[in-house]
Amino acid sequence: MAEVKYKGENAATGHEGEIVVDIDHISKSFGSKEVLKDISLQLKKGENIVVLGKSGQGKSVTIQCIVGLLTPDNGTVKVFGDDVAGMDEDELKKLRTRVGFLFQSGALYDSMTVRENLEFPLTRVLKMADKAEIDTRVEEVLEGVGLMDAVDKMPSDLSGGMRKRVGLARTLIVKPEIMLYDEPTTGLDPITSREISELILNMQKKYQTSSIIITHDMECAKITADRVVVMRDGTYIAEGNFDELQHSDDEFVRSFFTETK
Ligand SMILES: Nc1ncnc2c1ncn2[C@@H]1O[C@H](COP(=O)(O)OP(=O)(O)OP(=O)(O)O)[C@@H](O)[C@H]1O
Image 1 (tube, rainbow, N blue to C red):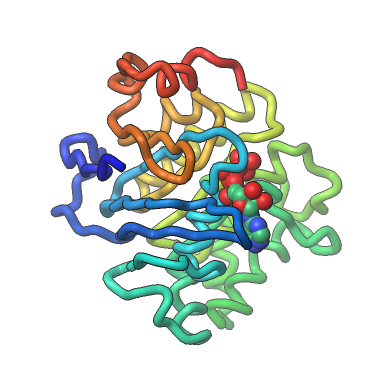
Image 2 (cartoon, rainbow, N blue to C red; image 1 turned 60 degrees about the vertical axis):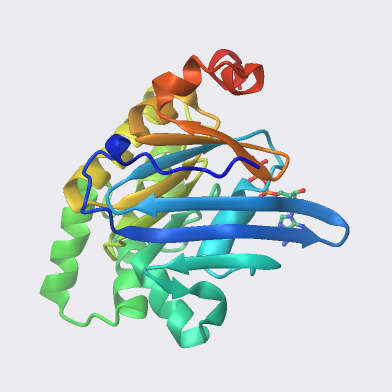
């Protein structure tokens, strides 16, 4: 496979080149099914990478390897310089406070208000106890996603787009340094999708967050990506910025930019 090269000039906020996620030649099979064959990728501080690929290509498996929910069969994943496979439960817990992930479902606790959903990671994960400090964090993050009015509502009273935004706020409230987004705009109307994409971009700018964004939504890719990689048959076959790949010589790569997903 052609190794994915890092193009530093595409990084939006270029933070002295610090590599926060280093995926080095990983492979992963489930039974006889080889899902990841040879994946290498480096995410730099402050950078947004979008991963494109058809369904079932192992994009989600890759991000699960980054947070230690899955372990690669071969190769290494280092986050902030440490090998994830070598971490014990405590180290993994700590890692997951620094790496936020928003999975497709982005499930909220239905029996809790928006405020309680947001307080949960602060009190349970960060063990915060100062009520004033907790309130400030909740208000700050809700303002960030434009949902201050919804603070006392139940998730069932919110639209799909609003729930997605609360899910994002709940992930962001612990101020993760890395964000992993698995299809953040799936199932949303075009206007709400654009709002979520712009939110992802704002979070990157505001907190210098580094992100890997898996999406089929080309508008989301266009808005958020400093760099795009294309996955096929368990490897990355192309990388570049949005415009470069849109005009790629490779028909498969170009197809993402012309097909309606
Ligand atoms: N824990 C697991 N056990 C067994 N098979 C798995 C597991 N996780 C993923 N797979 C398989 O790995 C393949 C890739 O799954 P993955 O969810 O990473 O795809 P994807 O590229 O994210 O696709 P999509 O866009 O549809 O979400 C699928 O065939 C899936 O069934």
